[in-house]
Image (cartoon, rainbow, N blue to C red; front, side, top):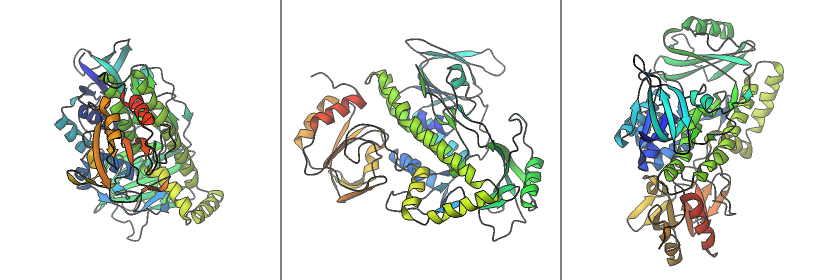
Length: 500
């Protein structure tokens, strides 16, 4: 084998997955079709759950140092309020995808990830033992890599998805948005966010003094997706929609997107898996694409590592589709709604007014906020404790080594059995998994934990936290520990116990 896992695509999803696998000791090669980084800005923000994921791995400070936290968000241009009690990182971080990719690549290099540039995937063959991945290399004969698994993180036009024969059903585009990173010297100082006009809508976001991300949306105009985008097209579109180009000049990057929405029918075909845009594309409302992809990677990484290392059966990989496909489906659903809410016309004007009047209610605001930041995602892990399946909050703990945040216990991407009442029974139950599960005794500094989707939950007596930060098992205080359920969860997620 040339590697345990080959990842196609060195974007945020592929790099995050590579880091997750390397933390578990898995040998990884990332094959990227581009010759080098383009420097294109692309996505512009990270939501709460992704910030938490980076915090769980101990690298969040790198990203906070290069971005800017924003205390406001939006649903189709209608403002959302955030609740500081739901997360230690409640606000979105404005940071360009180009910076995210650079920081993830630096981390991946530190962990020993190998990246092969100018190496597009051109073919694959899988058998019972692994996958042969054919790579086209510019100016040379094609090469092949042999790996146990291949993961396609190669974007919405994924070659891996097509070669694996995975269907990509969805809805066709009904509009076209042009995007440009430009200077707008004549933009009014009182300009605020999105402006809807009879011909469409436009928005401008400031990234640094004088430099803006301008986006125009025109409906029922869908050019061939292979047609190149020019600066002049962006300027003319802004004039059609806004009546002026605001002195637009000095383009750094121009591109196009639509409201096409598609999702892979399955995220796994044997030894080939999909993540990120290769598994789902959608209207980029609310900046959910990059975040969903990174969260795909964190869900898949530890599972794939456990299978590669022989600790868990291949069937564990089926839980990746079972857990992440519904999340992707929800993202497609809400972005379709956001696309409809911004379409020009008096009917949509009325709908936005009614929708906006509902958003002043806390329950509505909370529901929409959770759609975007993914703090309320609950996986079907079984069990009836309100924490089970949900992401664990970053609780304030008192451990034998001193005070700690719970996420500090996840820096090594290993599962943690957290014993909050010092039970000998818990320690005995986990002995068969001592090689792959960390037992930590601690005390919670808070009597209740605030959990989006569940409210204020009494601090548990014990809980089993997966490497992705989701709870696989929990015991309520003052109740029996359900040790048989704990052993079942350990076996389901981390393989059978060691003999003896």
